[in-house]
Every structure is written in structure tokens, then in C-alpha cells.
Length: 277
Image (cartoon, rainbow, N blue to C red; front, side):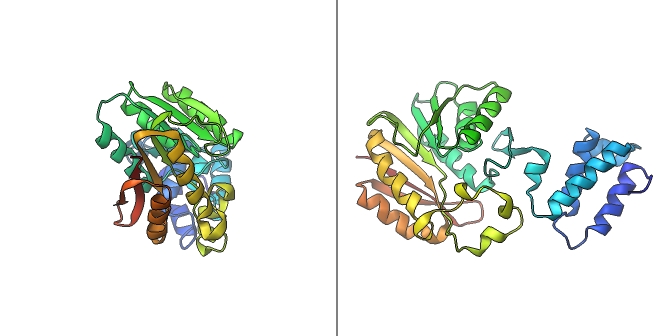
């Protein structure tokens, strides 16, 4: 990288990385992170990069071009109204998942409830709900200790209070103990070509892939959730759009009623819900 002001170096790198994974918006976020500045100052004030800054940027660009998600490189990702620490142990939170937050908040309003997020990863769903409803008792469960460690850091950074549990799905959860259970479980087939896509290729496989064409964990968590809910309790689960019909059958087999499928921001069938009668 030549000895130019930061903005000119950014323009230079945009040209050099054309047709690569590292797009102009990624480069912008990297420059802002390394400089510790905001977009307004970056474009209006003369700022320069030190030798260490340039070395750090070169490493970031290389990582991004290898397919690593920008969120891992920057170490953070925005979700709902919170900013989360993310790393290679957890999935990068996606906007599609925010539909779960909206649904739960609209369904229960200010009513005090106990809610658990199963397979919480970074704690995104649990912490978003806790940030909106201080009177809710929120649990976040994962079988990965590394994921729970990440969720704990996020809880502390956000000054929120959630209860972290380590468990293989709902094995350690008491029957008839929860009003709401949410989950974004692994639901991708190991043969799915999307696993090789930019960004996804570097995310933890155990948080993405499930047996039986991506359906095993969906089936398991739907069945287990019924036992843990109080009568009238709800289960909300994320899945692939093409899995919605099979997920509906899983809900029916587990004796759920009032089964509904909700579309995400792209109009895809993304979230299924059911009530325990």
C-alpha cells in the first residue's frame, strides 16, 4: 500500500479488489475499524494510516478474500437493536432471524413470561428479547461452551441479564417450565452447495448442518419443545423456505395447534410457530 491518505488508499484498494470477495463496502468498514473513525470524518477529513494500520488492513483484506465473513474480521455484528461480538465459534446473526424477535414481542407485549432460546450461539435472539423486555426471564441454551462464552461476553457488554445453560438441546430443561421457546437450529443438508458460498464457508458446520437432509435437528427440537412448554405456550423455529411443509408436519406430529408459517423480509417462508394446547 502506497503512502497516500486513507481515503485515496481506500479507492486504490476498491480497484485492486474488484471482482473479489472484498467489496467496496467491506473495505470501507475495514478502514473505519482500523482508523477508529466514522464515515463522515473518513470522507471529509484528511486521515493517514500508520505502517501497523496498513499491515492490519492487508491481513483483513486477505481474510475477506479467502471467504471469511466480514463480521468475523471486524469481530462484531449488528442484530435488532444491539451490537454483538462474533467469532468463528458462532454463526453470524442474520436479518431474517429478526422476525422471531418481532413475533414474540408482538404476541406477548409487556406480559411477564419465561422464554428460552435453544441453540443460542452468540446469544442474539435471547439478548435482543432481554433488551426489549426487562421484566422477562430469558434463558439461552447451547451445547457449545465456546458459543456460551461468546454469549456471556455479549451479555456483559450489553449490561443485560440472561441465564446461560449448557445442554444438548432441551435435555436438561424441566417439563412445563416455559411460556415461549425460540430456536434457529442447524437445518442445512451436508450436500447443500450453499455451504461453499462466500462467508458461509468459514462458519461453524455444527451450527449449520443437520442429518437427514437438514431435518434431524428441526424434528428433534420441535418434539422436545412440546414437553417443556406450559399449556398455551408457543414454539417458534427458523428453517429453510423449502422445509416449511415438512416442518408443519413435525408440528402436527408433536400435537401442536394453531400452526402458522411467517415470511421473512425477502418474502420467504422462514419461521414456523405453534401452540401447545
